[in-house]
Amino acid sequence: MGWWTEKVVPHLTDAALAKPEVMALRADVCRGLSGEVVEIGFGSGLNLGVLPDQVRSVAAIEPNDLGWQRSSARRRDSTVPVTRSGLDGEALDAADASFDNALCTFTLCTVPDAARAIAELRRVLRPGGALHFLEHGLAPEPQVARMQRRLDPVQRIVFGGCNLSRDVPALLRAGGFAVSCQPIRIMPAKVMSPWAEGFLGRAVRD
Image (cartoon, rainbow, N blue to C red; front, top):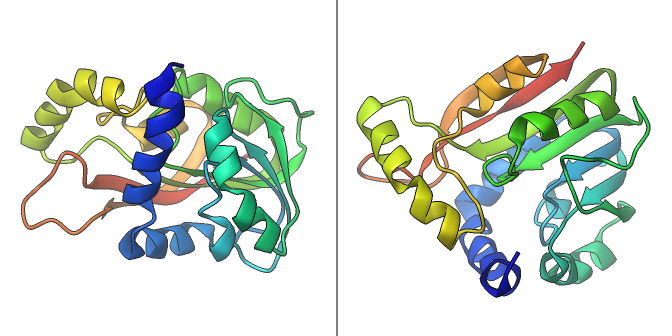
């Protein structure tokens, strides 16, 4: 992955995605989670502090060793058992129908093959299980979407493969999920920003 992606990007993303307004969105997306949960893109464990009491365990999928190390204090303080259960969201080491629910925050933008990761999440969810997702992505305003596409090549270099213009709800629907979501502003912005647009919702496996 390279020195920049492995050693610098985790610090940058933590700084940007641990702000109070983002943590409030994390609390929203985690509401309703229960049972055994798989989380792809676990990172430094920022979601642990907002998990409902009904969550019994978290299978954490995290490829970055520094991100995993940075989660140590949060894992130690969490009442929810966390196990690092893999490195690759595109190839989950779990049997079919293993989990009650899934969680994904600011991850589908970066996974190289998002459709494959979505197929894996659907495979390991039990029927009726839900993927709770909070992602940035394709803006509804055409002029902002055009700007996102122009910025994508630079964004991928600076932020470890991250894409600004992925249409996450469309990808989830194409992957066989029933999707309910709302467009959101991830960070307050006085003007439309290619980095501020996103989605918060649930995708239910049939």
